[in-house]
Length: 415
Image (cartoon, rainbow, N blue to C red; front, side, top):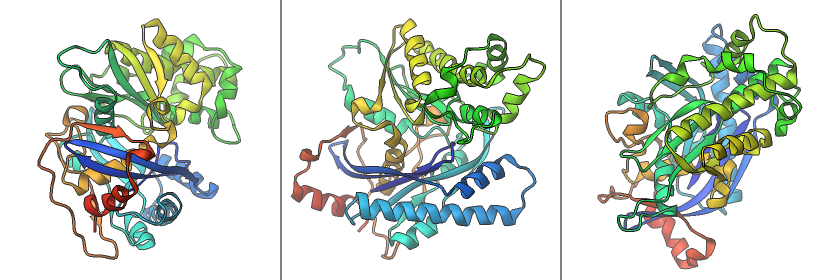
């Protein structure tokens, strides 16, 4: 199984190869490899520019869809040939989100680019893409979808022992362009976007003229100090007071939000701006985690590579008695987790298993997600799974014998 996506940072396509096997309600997963293929710089700039503009016509969007699809097709072919040893059965793609329209807590629509037809043409494999739209059609917000992985993964990491309650609540944190958390252990699972993650840091870096359009390794933020007046303005946004489930995006927490907060303030230096915006993510994530009495927070996503952000989170979470780990300490490299999710959504959809968690997205109920683009062969899906899926476990390579690995793909994925 190959998983593809490009996050809200719009810097390239992440690709993961994973082998899945379903046994007695538990998904056993064997990660085969992960990589990230950067967008050509001209395409990245066009993506960022076009998604901020209200004036671009259909010709510009059509061209963007074409070029994005080509990069996704190249990434898919790389995943099959280089990561999966030339053997794969299905591509799961979350695409490149370019618009997620939410008004007063209701998602009106969501738009992803990524050319599933081009992926199928390049690989000859069926593609399960556009999983968000079905959740939106069912009254949900189409996001976050990571909770389906988080809930199963955390159940595999920390299985319940009898009726003994766990020593403390474990939360999964994704530090992507937008930060989100998944909460289990207090009734129905809950997941929501806490607010900006890396996207606003990138916007601040572009505003001060950073050549890379980002604060690599938190270098600028490390030289600055938090400006209390600016932080107070940033924290005054109404989104932070909304009750979950809730979702947001760069449409809300982008350069306009930042410019509005800077109006009428004394000049803010570049290092102070980056430090303050980074602290905003620290404070809003910590507040959300503390509200759920987290004892352990497991972080993933691109923000894990930002030492200023991570040290701030470790400091603030520690004040609330919570430990901060990374997903890499528990079997999934932080950068690979969302591509792993895309592969999992493909596996679930193929087997007729719901890929959303309604209590997290706000949908009317569980839904099988995704739209299938056929490959070179007739579709021959397995029989739908009739028993509940309760956990996901990350297996070591030795967990699957060679003979099992050869039969696993054939028996549990598209023929």
